[in-house]
Length: 137
Image (cartoon, rainbow, N blue to C red; front, side, top):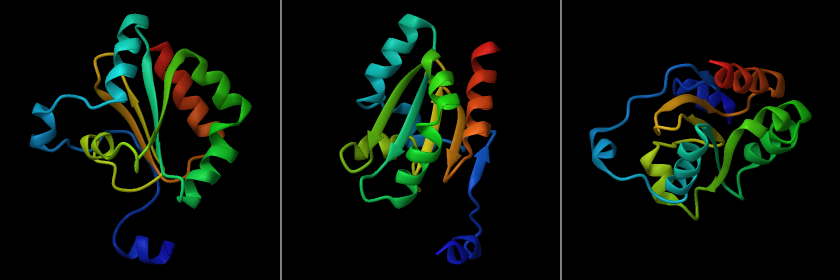
């Protein structure tokens, strides 16, 4: 499966710059449950960490057990509004944020601007470091 993905030009990893948002999405209002999480982040002046996943996604389960449940990531996430979005239940939210592969992790600032995106698996140490660096800026 990975060979076919790579043949198409995709590679897993961390994207420092968020992808371009389509013009249609810029004018649309932020869908739930992200809207509520952003409201909470604005009141706390914090970031929103979103894990876009699906129950059937094997890579999502690996990411959860190896990375998202690691002590260093859990510790770093204490300063974030954390949101887990099942893409099958919240298709509008996934489409709004151009989620085309899972797992997809997003970090939004309190203004709702995307400051980080990761598609696929990411190591716990790398994610924890990124989470810590964002809150100290």
